[in-house]
Length: 109
Image (cartoon, rainbow, N blue to C red):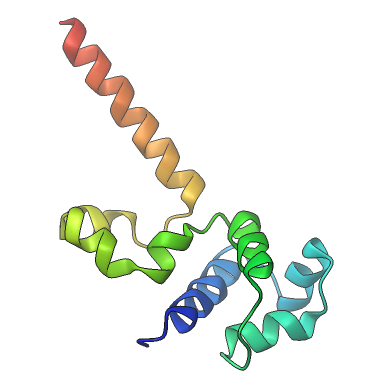
């Protein structure tokens, strides 16, 4: 899986399944033909940039993390990457907010 679009396709498929959405349901949410989702997930097409953005927004996928995982892993420890694996962008942001709150409390002590 060296092609960045293959990595993105894998992330779309795994996040869609994690959210218990069918390809048809996702396509309907985005006003797309289900074939667009099928072709993307099976690496049969090169989606337009607009399609990538729409999918990333709908599924809460970080495009950078999906397409350039080596950049993320170069700056973040394996423990952190393992902890956040499989979590949605919204869940990750919630954990970050909690950590910031805890840090602020520690500074106040």
